[in-house]
Structures are given as C-alpha cells and as structure tokens.
Amino acid sequence: MASHPFDYRAPILDIQMNGVLILTLHAAQRAGIMDIGTRLKEVRKTLGFTQAEFAAMAGVKPNALAMYEAGKRIPRSTFLAHLSDHGIDVKYVLYGTSETKYAEKLTEDEESLIRSLRLMDPEAVRAIVLTVTAISAVRNLQDASRKEVDHMEFQGS
Image (cartoon, rainbow, N blue to C red; front, side):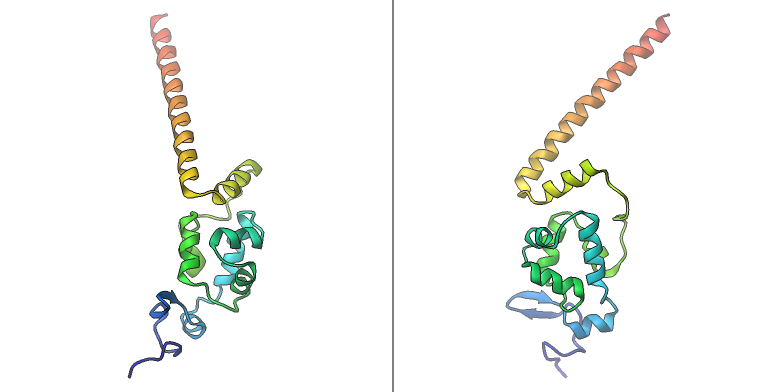
C-alpha cells in the first residue's frame, strides 16, 4: 500500500514537495523529535541572535522561525541546510545529540565576532578566516623563534 505524501505512516524524511524534502508533523511526533523548536531557540539565544537576525541568516521569515520554535511547524530541509552553512550543528537541533557544546560561554568579543561573521557572505568569511590563520601562523613562528633564541642563550651561558 503506497503512502500518501501526508500520511502519518510515511517515513520522516521521505516526503518531497516541489523538490524540497520536508518533515510531516505526524511523522516527527512519532519519531519523538518534537523538541526541535526548543533546541532551535536555545541555539539562537546562546549565539546571541534575535529571531529576526536568525531568520534572515537562515533564509526564512521571522514568523516561520517563531512557528518552528513554538513546535507548530517542522523546519524544511532548506532551512536546516542554511543553518549548517553557517556552522550550526543541525544534528543537535534535530536530535539533541552533538559533539558541539553550545552551553560553553563565549566572551562578549567572541559573541560579537560570531554574530558578525554569520551575517556575512561565505567569501568574506573565508577571507577573514585565512587572514586570522595567517596572523596566527606568524605569531606562532615568532614565539617559536623566541623560544629557540632563549634556549640557545641558556645553553651558551
């Protein structure tokens, strides 16, 4: 017996509508993943975003995000893909399991930097990452050189 696209017995991620994979509320309830909204809100607040900022970053309207957070709608795969593109652990949002620790407290400067980076286009973020990596590499080389000079002076005395 073939399942109807909105049949609660349909597999959770096996429904296509206009080429977009979606979850049905019934399938999500049966799978026990209805606290997606709670985790989504937790991640948003931990990262310091308003609903409007987070929605814009994820490519949805603020009212759609509000519905996701309230558990009244299940996020579409395109929304989840946007989150992933911005470094958000979608596995945690969906299932509550992750290696990422969102509870880890960031400094105000780190939070500000992350908020700014998440609103930038990927090419700009990549350029910033490369710049910071280069600066860090130069500092590491400088530190290593100083340690080597200190070690040579210590042996020479």
